[in-house]
Image 1 (cartoon, rainbow, N blue to C red):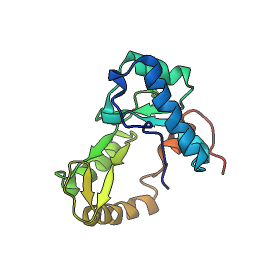
Image 2 (cartoon, rainbow, N blue to C red):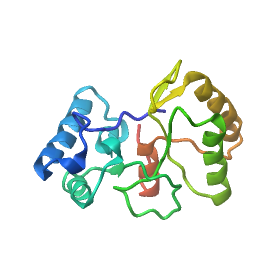
Image 3 (cartoon, rainbow, N blue to C red):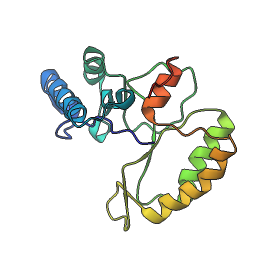
Image 4 (cartoon, rainbow, N blue to C red):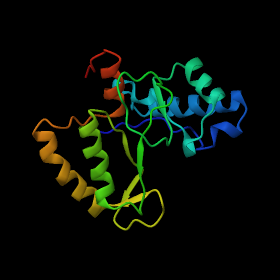
Length: 173
């Protein structure tokens, strides 16, 4: 599945805004997603920091706004128990990364017995900008991943499902 999570209203760097401006950006993004019906499992209440930019003020805003989780661009896997719900690490796929890099993230997480958030920001036929990855690479990755999922080696879930699972709550459809 896919989550439609909050990435702010205007995609502004949260660390350059006043505390109140940053809170408004988060709130307006969340309200907009909810108005469109993107509320399954509370997905509109998970935040992705624009540009990965965060600091203590942005994390405090997450607490005050009762955001379920937030992640930036910290590249690491997640060893449980994980206590930093406003600093979830992830591996961001960019257009210069070959298929083998994405596969290695999964393989290494399996070896470590850890979780791995992988971000595919934009999947396009011809990856040109840094945030894009080609449809061909994505299809190849999914075809490589499928037997691992079907064999019970890898459990693929959305960020929302993962956060609910580690917090002891079971997702309700």
